Length: 68
Image 1 (cartoon, one colour):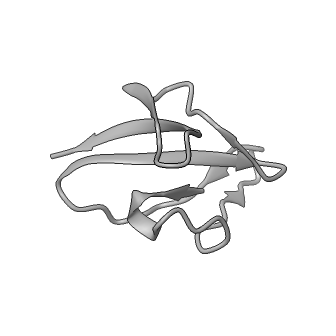
Image 2 (spheres, rainbow, N blue to C red):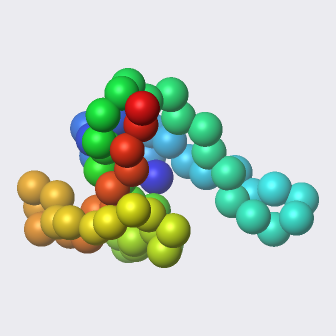
Image 3 (cartoon, rainbow, N blue to C red):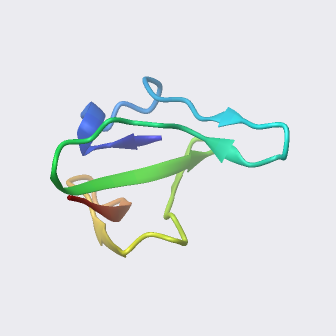
C-alpha cells in the first residue's frame, strides 16, 4: 500500500494475507483526509470501499479516507 502517509513509497507498507484470505495492514494516521492506493502486482488500484477517489500527483488513481 502506498499513500500520502509514506510519501507514496510502494515498498514500505506491504499488506499481509490473513488465514481467511483477506489482506490486512494497520497504519496510524493523523486526523484529516488521506490519499492511498492498493498495489496489485505493482499496479495501483482503488479501494472499492473508500469514501471517494481522486488522482494523485502522478495522475494515478488514489482512494480517500477521512480520519477524525
